[in-house]
Length: 438
Image (cartoon, rainbow, N blue to C red):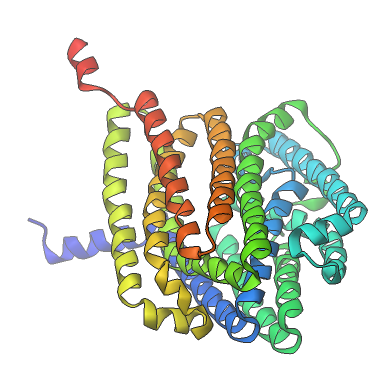
C-alpha cells in the first residue's frame, strides 16, 4: 500500500502534468463561454424576442460558412502541419507561407464575391434588403477574420494552449460586451452588428499573442506544392462540413419564416440555442479528450474498447443533462431566454432525443476521421445535410405546427448515426468469428 507521503507525491505529479493543466484551462474557458453565451442569449431574447433570435441564427450560420471559405478551410491543416514541423524551421516556414498565401487569396475572392452579390446574399440571409449595410461590414471584416483564423491555428499547432485559451476567453467576454451594449441601443441590428464585430475585433487580441510567429522572416507570399497538397487533404472535409449543415439550417429557417412566420422560426432557433448551451461542455470534452485519444490507438480491439467506454460516459452524461433540462424546462427557458420562448417546452423532449444521437454521431465521426476515412465523411456530410433539408421541406409542406416539424432533427441525427455505425463496423470492428478463424 502507498503511504500518505507517496500518495501526496503522486498527486503532485498528476496535477502538474500538461494534460491536467490543459484540461483545467479548457474547462475554465468553456465555462466562460457558457456564461457569455447565456448572458448574450438572455439579452437578445428579452429585447428582440423570437424574431431577433431567428435573424441572428441566420447570420451565425452564414458566418460559419464564411470563416471557412475566407481562410480556404486551412485551419485544421495548419494545426496538424505546424505541430508536425514545429522543430523543422525550413518546412515550418513553408507551412506558414503557403497557408498565409492561400488565406489572402481566398479572403480577397470572398470580399469580391460579397460585394458583387451583396443584394442576393442580403435577401438570402435576412429576407430584407434593409440589412444590406451589414454585408459591407462583413466584406471589410473578412481579411481580419481570416488572418485571425491563421494565428489561432498556428498557436494551437505549437501547443501554445495558454495563449489560445486566453484568446478564446477574451473573445467570449468581448462578445458579451458588444451584444449587451449594441442590442440595448440598436435592437436587432445591434445584435447582428455585435456578432460581426466580435468575430473581427478579436483579431487584434490574437495579433498581440502572435509574437511567437516571426512575421518578417517566416510569413511570405509563397506556395509550396507539397504543403499545398497536404493542406488540401484536410481542407475538403472541413469546408464541406462547415458548408453543408449551416446552409441546410439557413434554408430550413427561410422555409419556416415563409410558411409559419419569423416568430415560429425564432422558437425553432431558441430550441437549438438551449440545446447547444447544455451540450457545449460535453462536446468540448469530446474534442479535447476523445479525438486525440482515439487517433493515437492503432490496435482495432483497443479502438472498440475505447469507443464503448466513450459511448457509456458521454451518452450517459447527455441523457442525465437532457433529463434534468426536461424536468426543469419551465424554470430554465424563461431564465436562459424569456417567457416568450415557453412554447419550446412543448418540443424540447424531441430536441433532447436528437441531441443524444448527435453525441453518438460525434463519437463515430471522430473514429472514422482518425482512420483517414475523409472521403466517406465528405459523402455522409453532404447526403445527410440534403436529407435534413428535404425532410424539413416535406414536414413544413404538410404541417403547420412546430411540434411535428421538430421531429426532423432526431430523424436526421439517428439516420446519420446508423450510416456511421455501419461504416464503423465494416472499418474498425473486429468480429469474433474473424478472431476465431485466425
